Length: 340
Image (cartoon, rainbow, N blue to C red; front, side):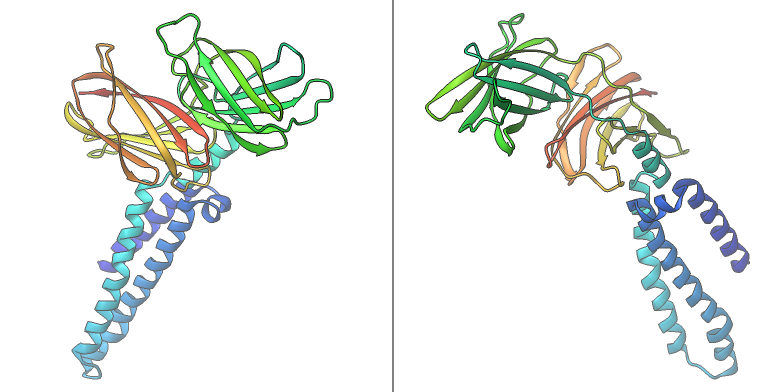
């Protein structure tokens, strides 16, 4: 009976692996695939020890050619391998399937950006400002500073941005100092574009012997890029939402237990290879069925995993999240769930 049960487990596990991995690339080049390989090797070792027990140790015990100490040793070896197998299985449940990671990488589009150009009033300096992703919230700013006449990179001592929103005088001005990135480029990360609208951005370029100001007008993106959302439902388990991010990689979010009352929101970011993405920070808000939106208090669980406690009433809830990686890139996503 044990042999038949083991055979069924191996066959169903192999069938599930073929679906979740999808290709040799998914098996060898993703965290999910490599973890599955480790688990498979451990299972093979466990089966080998079990077979040795069944067909060699037990008959030897019956014939008096071996003692109980031999059986104890093989059982300890089985336990030593079984524990890592359980750890690998738990890790696989937290990783996006390799087939999904591969498909997300194939469908990945260049990160959206808003690009504006301008020059100072004396036409000595030209600036190209690229804002990624260009919407309200966290963005990455890259300013390319060149000479107006020659187009060659300008030697600058300092470059900073000052933001104001003429249509909303109640929104205070803010600034951001950029860091040199080589070849006349300066970059920085920030949430100065706090709301959607047409912003005035003044680029202050400190050059040897003086400084110049380049005025720019920047309209934030209002339309969110389309996102692929994969919904995984398993009876008795929380519904898991895996979202393909425009910048590459994915976000996995779920509510535990996913019913009305006290819940824990889990948000985990992954890079295009399926590894947990190291983040410098994350933000999230929840919109209730009534339309009221509240910012959530996120707590870091691991390098790319954040959680928040919240009370949910029955109805459709919407969750908007954004994050900034340690490399400086920004991501944003949104998903909805009906709470019963």
